[in-house]
Amino acid sequence: MFITTASAPVVSRSVYAPALRSLDRFLNDALSAARSAGTQFKDEDKHWSLSVDLPGVSREQLTIAIEGQQVKIDTVEGAPRKYAKAYEFNQDIDAAASSARLENGVLTLTLVKRLPESKATTLEIN
Image (cartoon, rainbow, N blue to C red; front, side, top):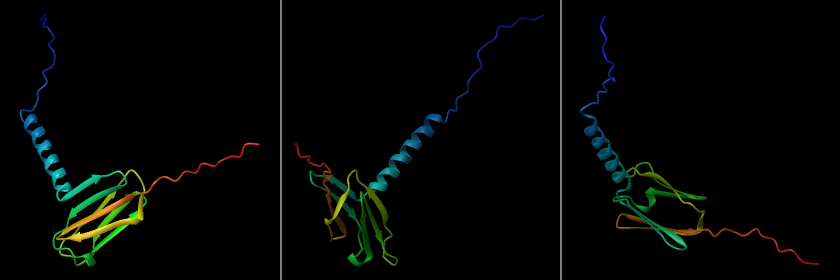
């Protein structure tokens, strides 16, 4: 009869695991930088400023739609550059007071924050 001691199972780790984690981190950083390249955002007291680099695109080749808290920027078919992106904000946008400007290939949106309307009712005391 043989008696042996039980040992804990050996967990083998891939020697490539640290390199794969580094590669994943590098690719995630590169993709997030590419997504935000050419986009600048500023949060002011009463409005937001959003600037997007769109070289070679004219005013006629852009559509900007504002609905509630969301802004959609699209290029039309036939534009020299394809761009389609939606931005969502934490507050409704006043579309009538907002403006858009395209100069030297940079689209600048000034999006005015809609102030929340008070629905409070004043009661008369008898």
